[in-house]
Amino acid sequence: MSWELVSGLETHVELSTKTKIFCGCTTKFGGEPNTNCCPICIGLPGTLPKLNRQVVHYAIMAGLATHCTINNISKMDRKNYVYPDLPKAYQISQYDKPLCEHGYIQLSNGRKIGITRIHIEEDAGKLVHEHGDTYVDYNRGGVPLIEIVSEPDIRSIAEAREYVEKLQMIMKHIGVSDCKMQEGSLRCDVNISVRPQGSEEFGTRTEIKNMNSFTNMEKAMAYEYDRQIDLLESGGKVTQETLRWNPDEGITTPMRGKEDAHDYRYFREPDLVTIYTTDQEIEAIRQELPELPDARIARYQEEFGLPAADAQLLVKYRKIAEYFEAASEGLSNKKTVANFILGQIFRTLVTDEEKENGAVAIPPEYLHDLAKLLEDGKIKMNLAKTTLDKMLETKKPCTDFISEQDMGDIDEDTLRSICQSVVEQNPKAVADFKGGKDKAVKALIGQVMKQTRGKADGRKAEALMVEMMNAMD
Ligand code: ADP
Ligand code: MG
Ligand code: ZN
Image (cartoon, rainbow, N blue to C red; front, side, top):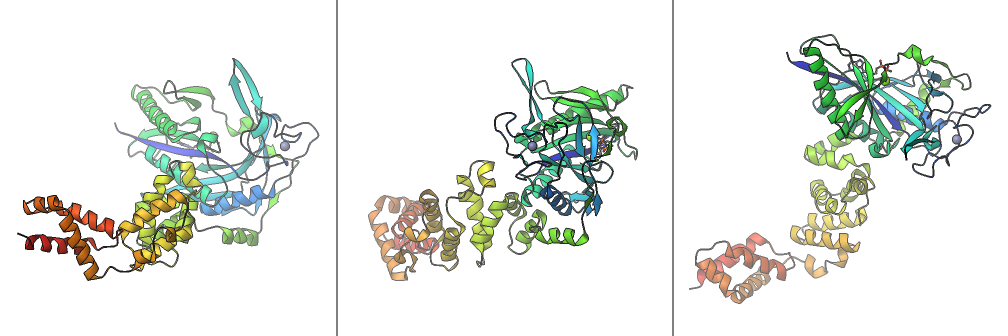
């Protein structure tokens, strides 16, 4: 029998607010354990939470960017469970009135993965296992999160990966989170089940907690898919349970039986008021949203004639997209600018982080000026390329490397006399050419380019020199 994979993801994204969700402590990552804490976020009795307005703002942005409906009335609830990383023994979250619902993310194959809901909640602290002991660090406790719950619409591991990548790109683009999987500011719980191909009914799912890298997510899903199929094919049943992925052994192991909502004893958080949001406020936030990645990619393709892969690569990093737009403003050949960025400039931005930060050595105006000279036919591509490398190395504008003389056109006579002298000074290449080695002319063209600093028209120089050499005995 052939089996179909069914998956839905719960993605936690830490919001980029300066302070925590219910107190004024900083959300900064790192820091000595338990130094970014106060009586509120470690849950001392008698303290009262106060909702950070920016959290609601960011969550609405996230909802709008993923086509959700924003609920005008929303509220916070207590989710009760006992675990050492949760000092109050409850997490303030949202249960039956989340802020955002009914959205989707569209994949490159055209399929829409439904988003059931996006709600806001507080992060828990972190358990650190060291020297055979377990320590608790509450710095992360109270950091604001949104949880984005997808419908069980995902049908392959590749779709799961693309869904998370798109989510990450959108959230980074609108600036609500840095979505760093390795720092835990984006974490996924993967729900997975299998069913016979063609069946309408869903199978029993398991949930793999806290995937913190794409590689682990893909491996864990592949393992779990195979495990469930083996189980079913040998007459067994899948138990609904929560699993942990063990990356060292490459297996999933049970963490605990699956809780149902009633196990959490959800009830309304009595210390916080209802969250009211008017349509006008929602509209104002919609207006504030930057152009979304999909729209930007489409525009680069349609208006600028960029290939899809290039457009995607530029838009993957918002600051690079902005750099590209600034550098190519007013130019007609945007594609050349894109090529400079994706080629020579990307070679200088080695890590993802450097691209993320848009840490290009020269400001976009410098690239613009260079591309303009090229567009106006004042310099040739060869010279532009070597100049760009020098600019990136020295952080200087192109005028430091290109003289007035470089920009003037080489007239026919000058080119002819340069070609003449190159032919005269390279008897060996000439002999090779005349002996039938057509390639020898390439070396001669190289000489002409060197002497003209890349300004000469290569094809014209070639024609001239071939003519000269053919005329020699
Ligand atoms: P809980 O909050 O207990 O984890 P939810 O009903 O909110 O449960 O669902 C959590 C996630 O599980 C959702 O992303 C949903 O799409 C996914 N899911 C639900 N049923 C299945 C299934 N049969 N197979 C795979 N994923 C599923
Ligand atoms: Mg869950
Ligand atoms: Zn605090």
